[in-house]
Amino acid sequence: MTFLENLPSFMLHAFTVAVVMGPLCALLGVFVTARRMAFFSDTISHSALAGIGLGFLVGLEDPTWPIVLFSLLIAGAILWLKEHTDLLTDTIMALLLSGSVAFGIIVLSLLKNRRGELHRYLFGDILSVNLDDVWLAIVLSSAIGMWLFTKLSPVALLTASEDLAHVSGVRTRWLNYAFVLVLTVVVSLSIRLLGIILVTSLVVIPPAAARNLARNLRQQLILSLIIGLIGGAVGTVASYHWDIPCGPAIVMACLAIFILSLVVGKFWLNQPTRAKSA
Image (cartoon, rainbow, N blue to C red; front, side):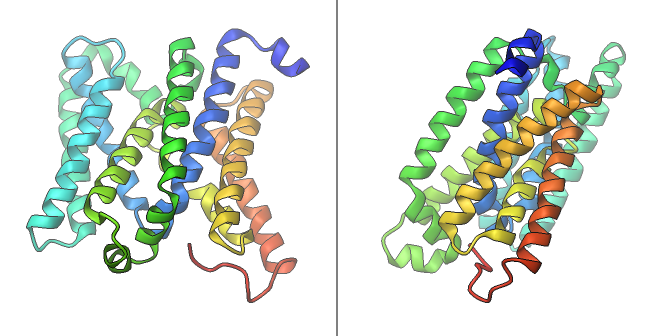
């Protein structure tokens, strides 16, 4: 408590957002990694570059909502092309990623007076979050966390086998859309936390670490949430004490936990019953 009491307000805001969004990204990441959607989240995060450019182009000081809207547009385009063309999913995502990044760079090149702000969106600027951002993170995490736990069984079944989920009565198409919508919103809003380049790491690393230790899906969900929480908290504290960038510090904290989990899982919990899949 002494640490929190001595924090300046901007660091307290950053710490709160980190310990709220970190577990949320990690929780979603369990299903993202199991469904091999890491490249999807990477595509969404990089498409935010175009949203940033468009937001600045129309004169907005904070391009958060253009980022979210453009990311949703890209997510919708991925789903539409997947359903209506013969293109492979990774081809579609690579196409849209490269196109949105190119479009964003062109738009930003026209805004010579805003180029300096690009750095904080590429690498994160969690220290600039305000009280409104904190409440947004809390509300978003609460709403999505409640939705995910109410839909945990159908989402888990969909992750294991879409055909089995469909036969069991799950509305797979709409659940897929809902999951993609939730993931897109979380990834696009987390860009303030880690930046375009690093945001996917918060979705991938905690569940990967949890996978090294968990024996079943429930354990993986709980461990992933805890690792996301610890990574966010430790990274923010390290950033404050060592005067290093906060986003990369959070990623390195998560990576350190992953390495520890790898060692523990390999040499201490090396049992054949340990979970190999979600």
